[in-house]
Image (tube, rainbow, N blue to C red; front, side, top):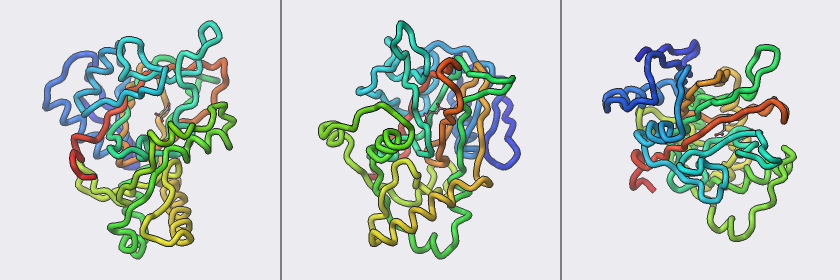
Length: 291
Ligand code: SIN
């Protein structure tokens, strides 16, 4: 296996490895280390069945099964389908997943470790891939904060709410999803997590805030919380912290949800087909009893 880091400290491509075959424990742990270090890693030219994707992903932790979601592989519910393709007039996958800056599952008591996506159909226009996935580096964002703010926010917590992203999609992105029912909101109550997490792989601090779900810094007045969150959102999205994965068919893309935030760029039309299979690995192995 050959790891080729991208320029700028974030992102790496890993060659000479076939993810459809079982790997040694040593190899899985080396991949995990690379993920912590580079935040986003990609494996080009892979060919995986849903089962092989599931089998690979479960080496990194418990896989989330999205019970409310109908868009998963019929045999392997841990494998979700992200797609704008319709068959017989019906969508075959979730068409608007992650289309703004966020961190997966920060609204959940057990947070997410990694997303593992396998690109089956990638839309292209004029020879360029569409539907790329953008990332920001939260190790660098923490390190780039003014020291006074690092000190002020140390030990504080943020409330994250699933409904924030949901409502933003309805309000700003023309999503036809209905508002969450009382029942659904009860099943996903807001949760709190530290503003700064010590990353379990790198041992360094990361800024664990994101515009998608972060609502309130609990230990501050509402006015100061709004002011600081506004600052943190602008700070973490600076160009200097960004990296963009340009998809190619056959890519397996893995990212670290603690050390990065991400955005799925929706720059393709309904006839420009995109088909991705995704597994979500939870961070329960790293934080079994933290919360
Ligand atoms: C996601 O947020 O998991 C979706 C990312 C993508 O489709 O590029």
